[in-house]
Image 1 (cartoon, rainbow, N blue to C red):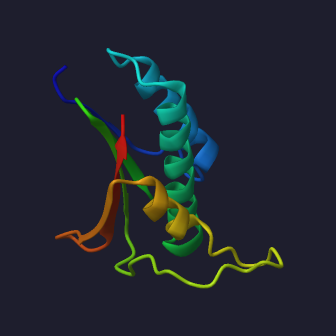
Image 2 (cartoon, rainbow, N blue to C red; image 1 turned 135 degrees about the horizontal axis):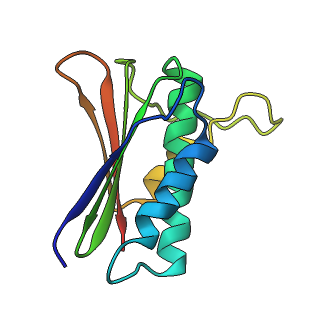
Length: 129
């Protein structure tokens, strides 16, 4: 299998994590060989968490980039905030979150936060295929 990549920009202002999951599912469904259902679920969860973080903490503007490698799927979310995600104590009372970034780090083989030349950042996670 060669590397396959797609850049998924939000279709409209106010795009949601559900929109990102829909587009991710379409990308995953088109891959050959297909990814396992467990791997697809993990990719969808990481997409949801990274896009939700961009919506909550980076002004709501984001671009999703998905790349399929022979042995992994890379999920990258670009947003305009220079602030890197940070590990914090999760709010067990349900008010402010704090679960997403630790979850992404547990599920991914690697994660990276890369400053963008034009400002903002790219948050990426490499997941098993």
